Length: 390
Image 1 (spheres, rainbow, N blue to C red):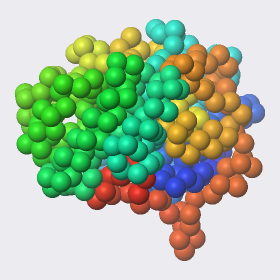
Image 2: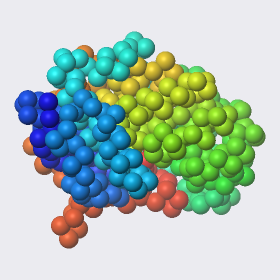
Image 3: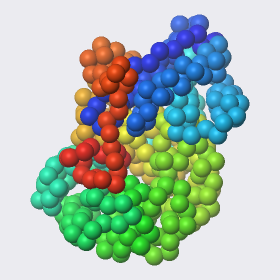
């Protein structure tokens, strides 16, 4: 079997674009990949055109060779764009492999280690930034049976918060915690904005609450800063969504600073690379909760991955609360029921795209080029005002 061609589609939302890659083969089997990369949708699409020699004409079963061609053999050090492009191709290849063998992807990656995968909600706090507003929104999450909910309570701040914002943020956390109680853990998103002293201060102020983890308390990749936070808090620490490819996780694995690793399948080279990262993490007793802000294919890929991991903890989910219309991009979506994702059973990802729907929800264009919604993590993290990543 050989890949004979490809095309891309882009679904727009107010805060991120979702890119779909469709690979065609000489045996009539097609495969679908999906990814998002903030601010670089057009760049990733052009990159795939530039490097199509690395996948067109090749066997979709040869995932390891694909990885080598798109990283090592192109000489330059791969980063976010390369790993996202690779993930799009790799996920589409696994869809083809699953369809060709009649198996769901998780069965091709070691089979089930879990009977079901718990979900935590994100994107639910599109409300006024007040304790009352956040508490009311949190009630809706708990009512849907979610076992956890994540949110970024912090306002303007780069390295540290002004004192008014610091105390306002603590009020928001307390309000959500009062609703969650022991029914759901709360995960505190910090988006890498803090200096160690500020991250430590926040952690001390919330240690008495039912906190699942604090996420990216310091700049991604700054291990000395992360170690400083680790030494001063008992709260679990999560990170990893902005590390691209296994080599960037090297310092994290053995640091003792991270309790929950969050590789993003769509930005770290695909599901096989993410599984390698997660399996290495298990050797260090680190749990894994994949970062997932995607649509139907990304969510399914993360679910398939979690099903194969002995150290899978929980899976992020936006699409019940933020832009739920993205579920319509395919003819199947793994809906969360009573706080858990179901086990998919269809070959590959088991999805056919609704291309008419995607075409009717295009991204914005500026001078004929796809424009990404703008986000600035350090200038106003209020979802309701700017939109927010997870």
